Image (cartoon, rainbow, N blue to C red; front, top):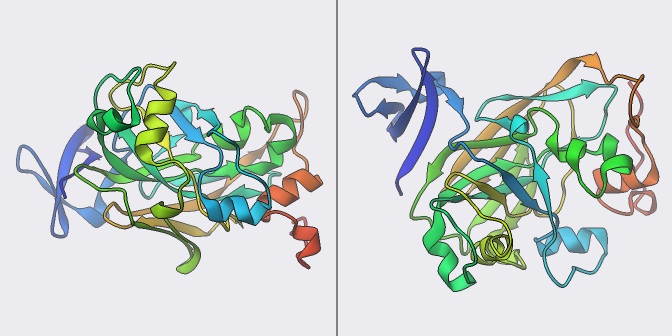
Length: 282
C-alpha cells in the first residue's frame, strides 16, 4: 500500500516514500529510515478524537456506551512524530498511552453520509492519544490539558492510502511487552461513521485528523519507557517518554490531583476492587 512520510532532510521538510531500509525523496535523495528525523505525516487544521469506541474499553470501565459517539479536541501544539519524545511534566504521575488509528481527511468534507465519507478520506496513520490524567478532575469534560498538553499527539510513521480498516489488529507495546491487543472490528462506530458524524456541523479540511478510539488496558508509563503502537498495514509508531525539566506552576490554575476519578481512569476502572494499589509517589 502506498505510504508517504514527512521528514526533516538537510534543513527542509521533505515528503519521502519507503524503499527497503531507506526513505527516498522525489528528487532521488536517500536517507536510512533508522536515521531519519520524522515529522507528523500530515499538517492538520484540527485534531478531533472520540471518547469511547472500542467495546473492550467500554467493558473495562463497566459502563454503558452512549447512544452516539462523543468527542474532544486536541490542539495542534500537541502534535508529535515517530520517535519523538513524549514529555511527562514534573509532578505528574499518570501519563497513559492509548494506541489508535488516525483518519486523515483528503478533501473538504461537509454534510456527507457514512456511505459517502470514504471518498473524503486521504488515508490513515497510527496514533498514540496520550493522556495526562493528573488533570482529569479539572478537565474531564474538555480534556484540554489531559489530552492536549505538548507532545501528547504522536502520529506516524507515515500516511497510508488505499487501506481497508476492517479486520485489522491494533497493538501497543511498552518496552517490548504487549499491553494492548485490539481490533478495528470491536469499534462500535467505524471510520466512515465518525467522519460523517463530525462533518454534519464541522467542516473537515484536507489534512484534518480524527482519532478513532483505543482498546482496553491503557495504563501509565514512566520516563525512560519506549511505547510503540502497531496497526496492521499502517506500521509501527514509536515514542519514548521523558521527564519534563520543570514542575507544573502552582501559582495559577487548578493543580494536579490523585483522586479516585484520576486513579480509576489511569489504572483501568474499579482499581480499588481489583487489588491494585496506586503507584507510590517518587
